[in-house]
Amino acid sequence: MGSLYTKLKVFHYQHKLDSLPVEVDDIAPPVHIRIKPTNVCNHRCRYCAYRAADLQLGKDMVDKDFIPREKMLEIIDDLEQMGVQAVTFSGGGEPFCYPYLAETVRKLAGTAIRFAALTNGALLEGEPAEIFAERATWLRVSMDGWDDESYARYRGVKVGEFSRVLRNMEDFKRLGGGCFLGVSLIVDEENWSEIFNFTRRLKEVGVDSVKISPCVVSNDGAKNNRYHQPFFDRAKELARLAVSELADEGFEIFDAYHSLAETFVKEYRWCPYLQILPIIGADMNVYSCQDKAYNLDEGLLGSIEQQRFRDFWYGGKEKFFRIDPAVHCNHHCVANEKNRLVLDYLAADAEHLGFV
Image (cartoon, rainbow, N blue to C red):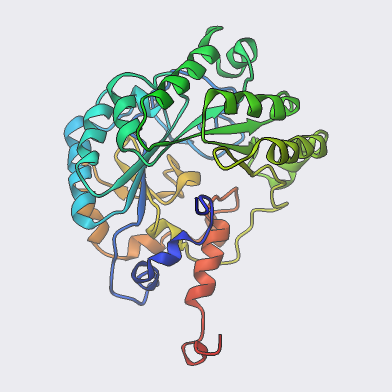
């Protein structure tokens, strides 16, 4: 298996890279789009970034919003026509709460577009699960609690939901198909000591991969690090132990548990990745990125409620440069390192390219 998490994937799309700068007239389609089909969620996670007061993500989110059926099918038609490579369904809310998910992914399965989803796994059953198992590229379940009682505390759900999610994952693997099933283990002050044991249990369930990541508690990098500092070294050791003792050819562990930058300040003045991986929200707005979804002041690129996505995308390039990362993005940014790589690529002197 190749590298799943490399930051260099976009460099396989040279035409897209070369279309990015403001002085280039060409507008190429996004490579990848995240679609948030609904803001309705069946869990109430205490650390949810969309509902946490200390995070800017989700600032203007309306819980009841969802993309109407006809609009969603129109979007899929546009993405196919434009040549978009991949779609990921995520929250906002829980994608499997979306009433038209089965119809949507059935339509996607008839195109060349690869698709995936982030989910809490509680509704991973029935026709949507069958289509994902057979046709999706990957599915990742977000988890935190390590047993029924702790899971209920984390997510504001009834005791027993944890067992239900594990059963759903086991059943999903029994469906066969080629979908890569992963779990995102969100580490905080309560569950860090369970990293090894819980990862071992997930391997027994049959998942293909576990990604170990820190819980982000604030827009301030130093505050995040202070939160994790009391248990960071011990948690990191358990993550290393899991990799050394549990990972093998059939079970991948991606240790993404790390300290965050002390500051989230950006020195660059435009964001390449908003042209590479934009977000379509359940409010039918297009946002720059995952970290600015539902932020109307600083993340909004425009609305597709009254126009097709393809017309919005190709209707002028100025919207891609309204957001100045040095001014508007002094917060956690999943694309920051990838932006730096792309900007470095674009800044190479043409007269010296041969001197590799």
